[in-house]
Image 1 (cartoon, one colour):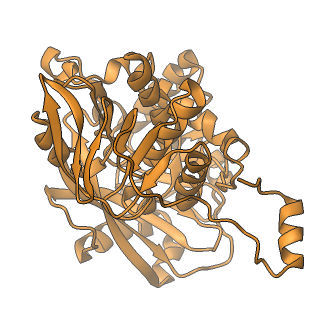
Image 2 (cartoon, rainbow, N blue to C red):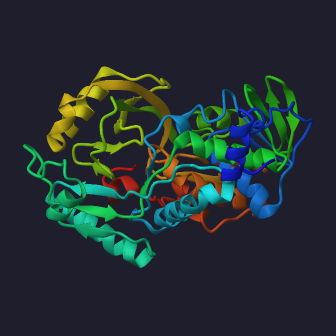
Image 3 (spheres, rainbow, N blue to C red):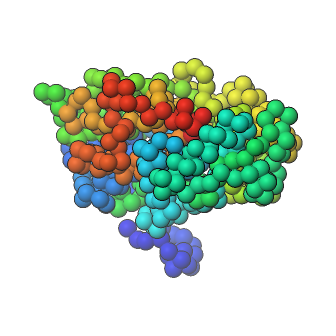
Length: 414
């Protein structure tokens, strides 16, 4: 596959862009593969990429029921940060953040990574103490963050109102190297790199069953026939419970909708990401000028990918207190994604009761930021049977009571 470069752009411009190759192939599935990944979102594609790059396993199929990147990868607010309290969480998210910084070069694809910084506002004295604690923990973990004053918050975000009617801004946890990336480009870049290694990306193909013999996986039944494998990675976010049921085991997760929206585009006014967890709203400005807005997950289990009025009302009302200027903006569009929530709001990257079947799920509302770190660790788990990045995130922690409770630690699990 030809590399993308400034010279390639100039060459194709001279011949009216008639020579561009397809970014990835759409082959017919083979009878069997060394490994199959179910789910062609960011986490699944990253797993396949690092299986090839780090372990030389390239006889891999990535099977997708819909279209590549059409699930949560294309339905999120693109926040990237690693300022988590728990050591295991900070390790995998910091690995991901570091990989995002070089991803465009590693994939030869511009993922538009923007290290614009992330502020988590402290709007109660409890949050002040909590974020100061997190800043100290991050220092021990090697994650660079700092607790900043209200004046410094105002300096970074001039449009903010520090004296909200309900919750004034008392400070913030600032991670300067956090930021955003283009969600579609992350999936497309990984897909192109996987295809270039000879992997098969098989879209519009539904997995309808998992075939086992003597307690071990031997392949999957699909809408295009049986495909054999001895290693199966399930990476399907909110549909993880459905696939686990096919394989014959249960997962401690619930599926709920997480909604987001964007405003009409306006001139640049905010060059970082701001999260207000007390009122539960977060916002950044896209490269096109839209204000990208999100909030909490729905309070009931569902599989919808549509928005609802109560989300607009609750989230925008909360953010208008802190950013009065957005009250004058029109909403451009709204969407939802199906997220998979564990009891401790931390992911599951684990072997399963079925030999050869591995599960990567439970990222809840914070999966996008973890994509490269998740793929790196899960690929190692599938290839070697163990990864230090994923060791604490096994299924057995729920049986043993070893919870990684980031929802309690951080006040929110984004």
